[in-house]
Image 1: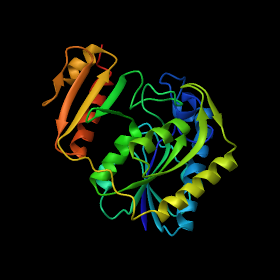
Image 2: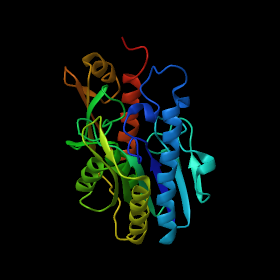
Image 3: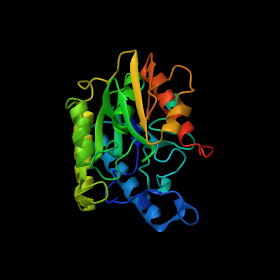
Image 4: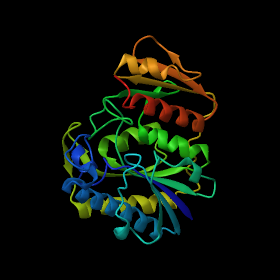
Length: 285
């Protein structure tokens, strides 16, 4: 059995603040080298290892991990990673590098996820806060977890596991109508504070959930959104929304939001990332 894993960072065991994830921008020196971030990388890697161990117990044999936090930030500590795991890393890996997705995977795991923008989950956002205020697919507000699962679904891959705080696990499970195993490793008190489980307990939850997830492979269906798919993005700045509206096929509401329709999720994913890169470009005033 072959598993593909999308790894973010904000939802990892123990993480409570952005500086532990290599943000915010503007930290003195190289943000990848701050002590908080270097420590949190090990916490994240241990969460991944727990998921892999649980999956192997249930019969999984092969794993490919997409190191997707920060687009070009290499987060996983390779010499501490379980030896059964191959890694896709570099630029750009956002949710997945879609060129590496295909029907040879039996299932997908999402590790260390966070809730969508506006939620009370720890470090909640979609792509970039406060730049992006909301993303909607077919009229429904979504976060990175839903986008990640829908992209996997485009390739026929069912997402069977999500780990993170209580908010993202509840949010995603509701969207997926319960067709997922969850491992809650911490409980958010707000966007800025969280009650963390002891590491041993958190990783035990991840192992057990991963084992259950592998055992349900074959009964969980991919989340495949039928086209055409509508995408709506609300930005914090009307000028940025206007710049994004210059993209072919994009409509502008005259204020902060744009809309787009794509034939499939892969097209919508590419459009969303193009919008994000336009919006976050340093040439913006």
